[in-house]
Every structure is written in structure tokens, then in C-alpha cells.
Image (cartoon, rainbow, N blue to C red; front, side):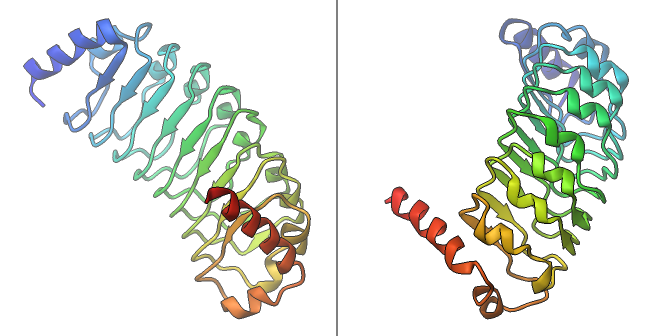
Length: 238
């Protein structure tokens, strides 16, 4: 995107609070963009050349939506925790390995998409967020779902195509979790907690592509109770 086009976008953003500068060849946040830090409610920086998100991102305290997909990010700055109004955050298709604990300050987050990165540990910083509805972590390197995940408020958790081999029994205590996606991981049948089938609120649990076949899964203790919830939800849809 040329300078003239960018200037027009900045001018429009001053009136609307919405700025999309995706595919603009940016390797840093331009000065013109920084001048909008108290105005922007929505910022799309996807498909640029950002190798890091500068600490100044924390000054965009009116943001409700931030999209930084398809860049070259290795991590996120602690200052991102200052975006107290943020509701939607997407950073897919980067090379992010670790996440700052300051994410726990983003109390208004509703949807987080961190798919297609290199994250190795489950982001427990997000488990304290009471308004979080969807946490999407597909295609990362996460090896386990820890006990801390039992506090996750989300209704949907996507961990497809990770390296999950262990699941804490306490995940069954998630207060609102209804959809759990675990396809193409490293799970053995005995790694799936029976409580997840018998006591949780799950109505969708996908586990194809793990170290057991579907018939063995269907023969697990508690599978019938899980299917009762699954069927009840399907009936409501039609």
C-alpha cells in the first residue's frame, strides 16, 4: 500500500476509529499511526513484516479489536496488558513461542485466536478472564492441559494439531466449556479423564487423529453420558 493510500486510511480512521493497514509492508508502527493511539477502536495490522510489536502498542487504550495475523512475531510485549478495553485479539500465523503474564489484565477479552504459532505451554494467564468466550490455539506445540485450565471461562477451546499428551482431570470443572477440540494430538485413550465425559458440560469433544481409534473412544466409561449432552444440543439446533 502506497503512502498516499495510507494517508487516506489515517484520515478516515480519525473520523471512524477503525484502521485497516494490512498488507502495507510495515516493519514498524508508523508515526502517523501512533498519533491515533487515543482514537482507534479497531486496528488491523495483518500480513505485514512486523518482527516485534513495540511497547507503544500499550498506549492504544481505546482498542476493542486488534488483529496482527500473518506477521513475523516471536513474542508479545508486556505492555499489551494495558489494552484494558480489548475484546477481540487475533495473532495467528506468527512464530510466537511465549505469552506475557500481563495478558491476565485484559479483563474484557471475549475471543482470542493464537492458532498457527509455536506456543509450547498452555496460556494460563488467560484462565482468569471471566468474559472470555473462545480460546483458539490450534496448530501450536502445547503438550498438556494443566490443572489451572479448570478456571477457564470459555465455552470453546480449540487445541487441534498440537502435541497434547496429558489432560488434567480438573478440566471437567470448567464452568462453561461446551466445545473442546483435540484432533491430531498425542493422546492415548487413558489420558482422557473419565470426568470429562461424565461430569463436564461438554457437548462437543473431537479427538480424531490421536493414539487410539474411534471405536475404543466410544467404548469408554461415561461415553453414553457425553452422547446424551451431544444429542440434546443437536436437537435444539433443529
